[in-house]
Image (cartoon, rainbow, N blue to C red):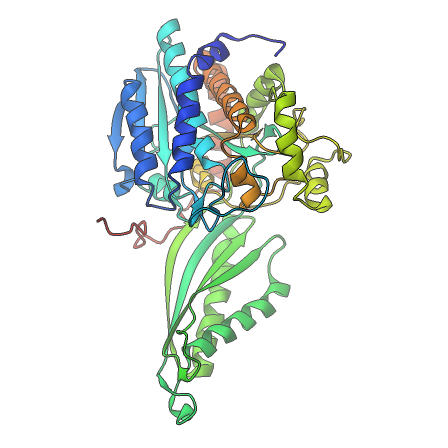
Length: 470
């Protein structure tokens, strides 16, 4: 590290506490809206750090907020701690070795811990300098398919926030470009009539036939979708295991994505019509239920430039030679395409012998990164928002993979997590210290909303899909 900054020194004081928090969340992986232990761990840390705590945000038991400071602007730091199904993996092992059903295959154990660390560093800086302002940590569950932040935005939890900051683990370090996809998840349940598949098949009306015809129809729709749009599906109920029964009920979940929220409803309407057509063809009945929805990310150039400046001053993550062997072992399990794809997205020549990122991506690069979706998108429409990518794993490591889970407790992951906390804390410090910077970010945000107002993608009747307690 060539430069020094007081906010980085403050963050370093908390390294051990938040490394331990990240590992604890890793060891108790929980999926959307069931993150009871992870939320409890974050709430306990908020209590230890003297935060004013608000629980059950938007009536979600695993969402929590902690606040410090008085007066001045309100800067939000967004954290997550949810895991993914089927990605349990023994940490520190460079071969697939599943452990249980769930795992942190997107690094959210690191994400929430670094975000809370950044918020605590800002707390200390506000107190040390006597600067007026409030820093808030939002512990957000269910980013993976649950859209918790969308529900939180709809509930008004960001109405008095001036700006929001977050990050995501990655295999490189750079500003997170605002190129995500808006999406909605809809469950289509077809209801027909059971019958003996051999003795009286003509009396049956197959719900499974309807699901399969719907999927065929959606496949034909793909040619006619807007550029960048995606539709994926998964069978939630395939009608049961008995092939000699005409199934009376079957459910398929469709995930519909578009580059812009304004295009989403039109594509969803076409998917709904295909479902209705499948029901008509099979003489079944279809019921559609929206599960979740998120908006595309709205960028903020003012905040992106501020974060980039802090990244460049801090430099790349300080990996050392001890981190290299495991990174190389992980890369040996990947294809050449995985490794080359990272460099392609960043517009850089492929460096096949570089196991860990030793550079900061320029602000103008990285815009070609693969598109996914995030509920941070709805926060970005509510308040000016900026995010970082920070290297925590071997170059080429794909998200939602056992390889990423395997690296989630390694020293390299911890180094990247601490680095991310410093980037976020320094960016937040700049917003507290420079009224002109915050004013410019808010003006850019307001100008965009004047051209294209925000409309929550969640139907008003949809509530968070929280499992029953007990």
